[in-house]
Length: 352
Image 1 (cartoon, rainbow, N blue to C red):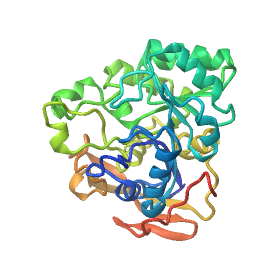
Image 2 (image 1 turned 45 degrees about the vertical axis):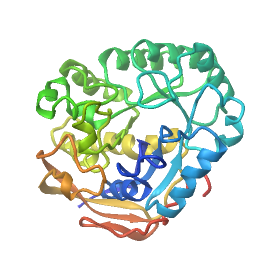
Image 3 (image 1 turned 60 degrees about the vertical axis):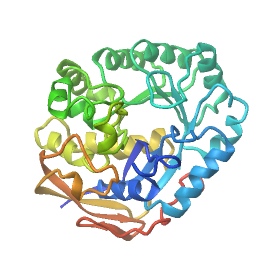
Image 4 (image 1 turned 180 degrees about the vertical axis):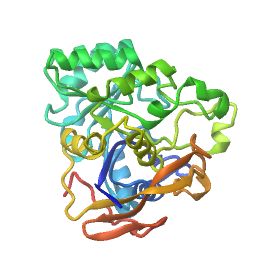
């Protein structure tokens, strides 16, 4: 058995409130434990979005009753919540700024709002941006001019990772994450997946973009799933929403890269545990670890997973390496396909 520390996913969509037919705090954190993640950070683009005291409490109230692993909830930057955010910052995973295509009402188009949110958010707390292409270049500059750390979500293209490399070489406090689906899929997989099931933001990029991510692995601080569940009926419908589930396939996919020599064990644990804890101030979990059977060969089947959405873009893939047991604070919370943690047993990391 390979023994890993408890993993941290800094980018998860749990769909509660507003769309619990896709996922909620119960099913999503069960999927997290099955994937080896003992802490998740939940995104704010729910219905309603988490943008103020009332909606933050609504999300956290559900988590207190349902969450099976540790967690924190992001706040979303909007056009009307500049004044209330600093007072809520200590209760949140961080502030999420949506500067490019997103599914929901949180996109910020006004550059003056970007500057105001960057200036107003406490500098010692995480600031995360969904930004692509020119927007990514612009928010790096805005943050650098104000001398504050910035984390860039789901980087997917060669031009973006090279720009982040250049910013880091300048000494600017920029960090970034990459998803497993952008490391293992490309636009070449779209015909196999189908039009609706290949919808994701950022979109699947070229094989050359994917290769550039692997070639610049030292620039990538975190692997994050961007777990974004939608039902098959929605994905196969006339207006398919973007997003892939990913909590239960991320670690096995990356273990394959480890076996192939594209990734070292230290690089894997740095990006799934050490760096996320440091960047997002995630407290240590005593007596917590993940046991992985490196030799277990299995076929990905959505019907056997814990996520409520019922599908995966990796359906039918044969993977090697599977989570067998997860121990959280000395208690077995997952064993051989069974989630043992009770709903509500997870802890809010901002109140520990």
